[in-house]
Amino acid sequence: MTDHPRIPLAAVIGHPIAHSRSPALHGYWLKRYGIKGHYIPIDIAPLDLPRLLRTLPDLGFVGCNVTIPHKEAILQIADVVTDRAALIGAANTLIFRKDGKIHADNTDGSGFIANLRQHAPDWKPASGPAVVLGAGGAARAVVAALIEVGVPEIRLANRTRARADAIRQDFGAKIHVHEWVQAANLMDDAVTVINTTALGMTGKAEFNVPMHRLNPGAVCNDLVYTPLKTQFLIEAEERGGIIVDGLGMLLHQAAPGFERWFGIRPEVDEATRKAVLSA
Image (cartoon, rainbow, N blue to C red; front, top):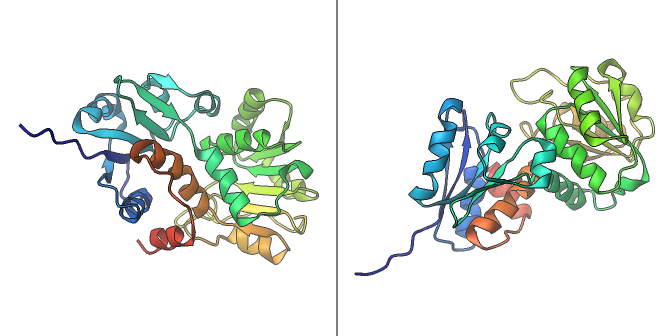
C-alpha cells in the first residue's frame, strides 16, 4: 500500500462569506510558491460553529481564518488562546495542531502596523498622539498595536461611548475617550488618524467626520478597502495627510497564517495587491 500524504487545506469561515477576498489572496500565494494546497471559503452559521469547527481537522484542514460573526465566539471554543487574542477579545487565525488542539491568535494588529510601515515608511508613531475612530473589534486590535509601537496617547471616539469606555478600561491610561461629536477636534496635533468604523464602506453610511482640523503630514489609514480610496482618505489627502488604504492590512494579517499552515512566509508586494484587486 502506498502512503499518500494529505494535501493541506485551509479556509476562511464566516457567515456570510462569499464576499471575502481571502480565497483569492491565499490562492495567489499557493500558485506563486508552487504549493500543493487549497484554501476555500466556508459559510458556517453561528449555532453550527462549535460542532463544525471540530470536524475540519479530520477533513485535512491545517487551519483557518475567522471573520464576522465568529471572531469573538471562537475564543470560547479554542483550546489555546494567545495573550494578544485574549486582550483584543477576538481571534482571526486558527491553527489545528497535531495534538488535536485548536490554537487561536489575532494577527490584525501586526497586519495593521506592517501596512503602515510599508506605505508610510517615515511614520514615527511615538512622536505624537493617535486618533482612533470606532471601538469595535478592529479598533481593539489597532489600539493594542499602537500601544505596542509606543504611541504616547490614543484619542478614542465612538458613536456608542460605552464601547469606547470598555477599551479604556481594558487597555489603560494611554486611552482618552471623547464624545463622537468632538472627533474632528481631536486631530489638531495628531500624528496618526485611523478610521476603524464601517463609515464610507460601499453600501454603508457616508463618512461624516469633518477633517478641517487634520494636522498636515499626519498618517491617515482607513481599514475600509471597498472602495479602495474612501471619502476619509480623499479628504485627508486634500488636507495634506499621508494616506494608507485598508487593503494592505488584509494582506499583511494573512501572511502569518499562511506561513504556519503551508510553511512559507509569503511576500506582500504590488503583485499581491494586483492579484487580489483583480479577483
